[in-house]
Amino acid sequence: AQKITQTQPGMFVQEKEAVTLDCTYDTSDPSYGLFWYKQPSSGEMIFLIYQGSYDQQNATEGRYSLNFQKARKSANLVISASQLGDSAMYFCAMREVGGGSQGNLIFGKGTKLSVKP
Amino acid sequence: GAVVSQHPSRVICKSGTSVKIECRSLDFQATTMFWYRQFPKQSLMLMATSNEGSKATYEQGVEKDKFLINHASLTLSTLTVTSAHPEDSSFYICSARRLAGGPTSTDTQYFGPGTRLTVL
Image (cartoon, chains in turn blue, red):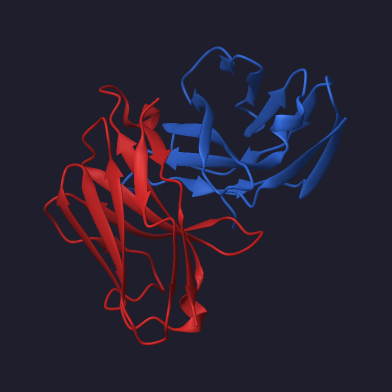
């Protein structure tokens, strides 16, 4: 079973509008972390935002916010005021603390976001 | 933010040769580094976890004799693709884990810029 599911292979958004990228996860570990990364066409992976499983508030970093719904096991990324430079692949990832994991990130399949001028 | 460098960024080699890729954490010590492989339009696939001073842990299906990993210091890990073949052509990305000093779930992984390997 997939641990990280991103159901939107591709998304379009108009410049200056907000967009939500979906991510659901599956884990039985009570302690985990959720991450979002941006991968532009150059290939580098850029860390955007982090949410811990015990965090009470949703994480925010500038124009990025994470809509964390623990009971639903979802961690959607919200990008406000989209810019042309936001066009990229976006990956949701999870780190489980227990279960013998060495702390590696488990990635979803990604969502390709295209911002239209 | 923390910086991870990767060298070379692009390499083209003949089938049968070996290629070494270096991954360095430039401004922090990384006891754990990870090596990923990414095919076009696909997600990152973890190949192995590299711990400083010990043997790497390989994911199922990854040949350890083909993909040699050496984590010689707290800032350097190398991946050597031995006897490369065209099917090894891919985008290889390393990442270094920066310890947060608190719950391990908060540790951030910083990624290198990747190495595009083409085997002719």
